[in-house]
Structure formats: C-alpha cells, structure tokens
Image 1 (cartoon, rainbow, N blue to C red):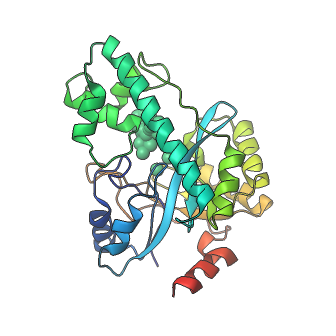
Image 2: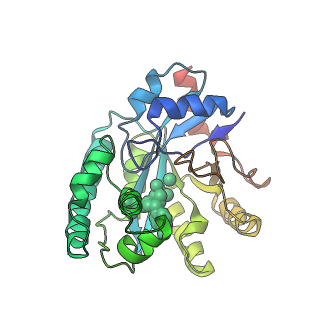
Length: 282
Ligand code: AMP
Ligand code: MN
Ligand code: MN
Ligand code: MN
C-alpha cells in the first residue's frame, strides 16, 4: 500500500484543486491519501466527490505555537462535523485573514500596492498563507523566487513580517484528539531546533496526547529520521509519512514520493484508532 498522509490543495497553498489532487494521487499509485490543507477542511467534500479508487482520509494541518516557534500539527481522520474542531478552524481562518490584512498593509509601505486584492483575485478559493504572498511578490517582479520573497519581505526577518497569533500546541492536539482524530507532529526536522529543544518538543507533544511523528517526508535526512525514530519508540509514538506535496512545479517531490519509514517504528495505520476508523468506513 502507498500511503501519502500530508498534502495541500488550492483550498490552502497548493496549486491543484482537490479533485485534481486526488486524480494525480491515483495516477501516482497512491492508495491512501490524506488531504491536509493549512487550517481548513474546505477541500475535503470536493475531494470525496471525485470518482477514484483512492481512499481519502479527512485531514488538516493546524498551525500552533510552542515556545515561540510555529509548529504544524496534522490531524488525520478528524470528524468534520465536530463543533470544537469547527470553532478552532473558524478561529484559524479569522487569524489568517487578519494576518493577511496586516501583511498587505506593511507591503503597501514597502511599495507593493493592493496586495490583498491581488491575492483574492489570484487565489479565489484559498485561505491565505504567506506562500500566496510569496507567489504574488514573484509574479509582480518584487522578488526573484519564493525564498527571496520570504527573506526580503514576509519571513521572520523580512520588512513586512507579521507574527501570527496561533493557539498553543497542547490546545490544538487536544481539540484534534477530541474530534476523533489522530495527531501527527509534522516535519519535525524542519523547525531548525537544537537537538535538545527538538527532544523537548517531542516529549511535550507526546504528553499533550500526540499520536505520531512524521518520520518520512522529502528532504528528511536518514540520521535525523533514525534519531527521531528512537524517540518515537521510547515515547510510544507511531510514525506517519507524507509528501507535503504543494504543486507539480516542485520538481523534487510528488504525491506518494518519500523515503521508507525507519524499520523500528510502527506506522500510524497500524494503530487501533486508525483501524477503527477504517472499519467504520468499510
Ligand atoms: P503560513 O502558514 O501562512 O505562515 O505560510 C507558511 C507556508 O509558506 C509554508 O507552508 C510553506 O509552504 C511556505 N514557507 C514558509 N517558509 C518558507 C520559506 N522560507 N521559503 C519558502 N516557502 C516558505
Ligand atoms: Mn504550505
Ligand atoms: Mn507544514
Ligand atoms: Mn504541509
């Protein structure tokens, strides 16, 4: 079975519509796909309607804060009708639009006019993210590429940086768990934390009720994966995997494409809660 449990549609900062994403997943040989847009499940219904043999998992990638860092938690098999989850995502939606307004106001002072209007025109289905601003800045010729758009404008040291007001990590994990979901610490190697701080993050994630660590995704180094696999075992955490696919333009990645999980960990799809969800769906 090929599992891809992390990817994005144009409901967040992905390039493909949900149905196109599912079709591409099928063409790539993916059998189980979780759509995990940033802070929204708006794409799930359309993805579900698209005719395909792919088993679709209702997912979401929620932004939160932990010790001043932005951390991403993936919820899998969440109940889309759960009231508390809906409130959380409504609040995240509001935070994203408010931050987008604040970024646009700063960009205006930086010589980029009407960024929010342009964003809405260019990405009519999307909950805004900095990735959209980066694409816009490149299209307007204000930055050569994404990386430079983050450096010069919207990244932490950029002139139009606006800090987001995300909720604390334990709160997000608790809500995703209460909505029947399994919770995954997304791409733990990407936060640029020291070894000690990463170990602390993983322990606090586990203590908050987290289910799994993402231990396979593009550009995760083997050494790092092995070290985190040991932590997963010690703490009784499962392992998840995903391509974090955003767009066909990212030539280094594709749906279903990621390194194998370290052999000593148990995949999240062997956990009792996952199996219970699959039994209900069958
Ligand atoms: P947001 O969640 O609105 O802060 O946007 C974050 C998104 O922007 C991430 O999901 C990435 O896709 C992208 N991103 C974040 N930092 C960078 C960076 N330094 N260079 C390129 N893309 C980035
Ligand atoms: Mn993204
Ligand atoms: Mn992420
Ligand atoms: Mn992602």
